[in-house]
Amino acid sequence: MKKFSLWLLAFFITIGAAYYQRKTGPTYPKQIDVTLNDSVYTLKLVRSLALNERPEVKLHLSDTKIKARLFYRRFRSDYEYMVSNFVYKVYPLNSFIMNKIFKINEEKGFFAVVPQQPPAGKLEYFIEITDSTGTRTYLKEEPVIIRFKGSVPGIILVPHVLLMFTAMLFSTFAGLSGIAKLPSYKKYSIWTLVLLTAGGMFLGPLVQYHAFGELWTGIPFGWDLTDNKTVIALAFWILAVIMNRKKERPLFTVLAALVLLLVYSLPHSMFGSELDYESGKVIQGIIMISPFRFFQKFLN
Image (cartoon, rainbow, N blue to C red; front, side, top):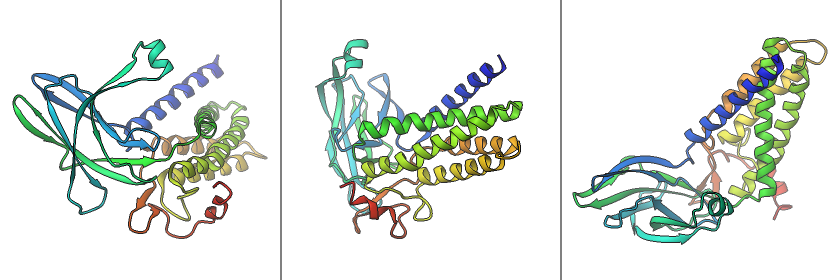
C-alpha cells in the first residue's frame, strides 16, 4: 500500500510538472480576452508553426461582421510591419479523433496568412480588430512571437516524449522512495538514468535536428535551455547512481529527483534555437562549431 501511494503521488507530481511546463512555455498559444459586439471571446494566438502546417494565424471568432488585420515582421528587426487581412474561412477537418469522437468535421474562423520562415525563423505580430464600436489594437507593445520548425518524424518524437515522461515519473518515484527509505529507490535511480540518457541525449538531439537543423545547441557550445537542463539533470543522476553503488545514500537520489523536477518545470523552449537571418545560422547557443555537426551529413 505504501509503494502504491508513492507511485500515485509520483504520477500526479509528474503530470502537474508536465502540464505547468507546457502551459508556461513560449510556444504555447498566447491567450487574450476581447469583447466584440457585446460578446466576450478568448483568443488563442499561435506561437509555434511546423513547416507542414498552414502558415496562418487564426482568430476563433464566430461573428462574421467584424474585420481584423494582422501586422507582422521578422523578429529582432527594424523592418516596417507588413499587413495581412483576416478572412473568414471554413476548412475541412481530417482528423479521426475530431471527426469520430467529437463529431467536428470542419474548422471555422478568421485566418491571416503569414510568410513561412525557415526552421528556427521567427516572426512577431500584433492584431487590430474592428467591430461596431470602433477599432482596437491588441499586443502592439508586446507582440506575439511565432517560431517555425521542421516536422519531426513520429518514430522519433513519440519515443522521445514517452521516454522523457517515464524518466520523470521514475525519477519522482525514486526520490519519494528515498525519502521513505524504500530499498527500491536504487533500482529506479538506475532506470531513470537509462531513460534520461536514451530520451534526452540520444533522441533529444534527433528531435532538435529535424525541428531546427541542429543536433545540439546546449553547453559547451551554446545556451539552449532545453538542451542545457537535460545535461544538468543527467549530471545529478549520474552522481546519484555512482554514490549509491556501494553504500546507500538516498540523499543524492532525492537531490537528483528534485533537480530533474525543477528543470523540467521550467518553460519548454525558453532560450531555444533561433535563426540569424544575416548569417543564415541557428543561434541562441551556437557560439562555436559543434562536433555534432560532423555527424549531420549522415542524416541528410
